[in-house]
Image 1 (spheres, rainbow, N blue to C red):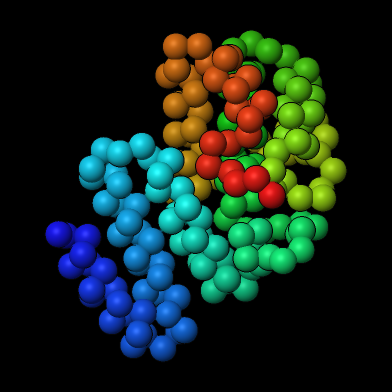
Image 2 (cartoon, rainbow, N blue to C red):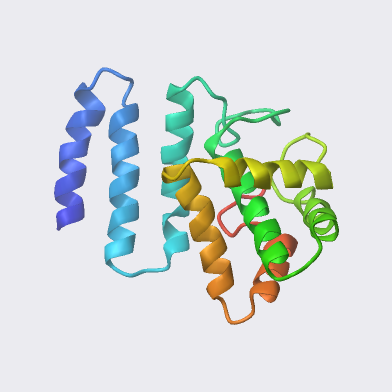
Length: 179
């Protein structure tokens, strides 16, 4: 019932905000994701709604996003690409914490990331992965750094963190759509 009440209100936002409906769509996507969360459903069910939400935020910032692009993007600055970089950085961070040598771990992550969907045309090297990790680690405390820290903490909390990293490297992030 709460979801329906929210959607009725959000329809008025969609219709009357004057932004082509984007704010109403973003809020509706958030409402759907929240509904899934409070029902304790599989969180992956919320991923498409959150992807639309992020794509619209990117659009409003003037950033082209993979979700709305008709051609592959050369060097994406979208929220989706930032998430892929953050996951790769977290994999490297955890491998290093698990005492794998930095250079060896970075090469391993780079080989896997080049096969991930939506990574784009950018050439991914061990140095690229190391730079992404350092950029994440240099973030001041806040939302962006919090996401990186939570990813690392989540991977480290698994029964077998290295097996979790192997799965991520093989399959890519579970919320990354195939391109």
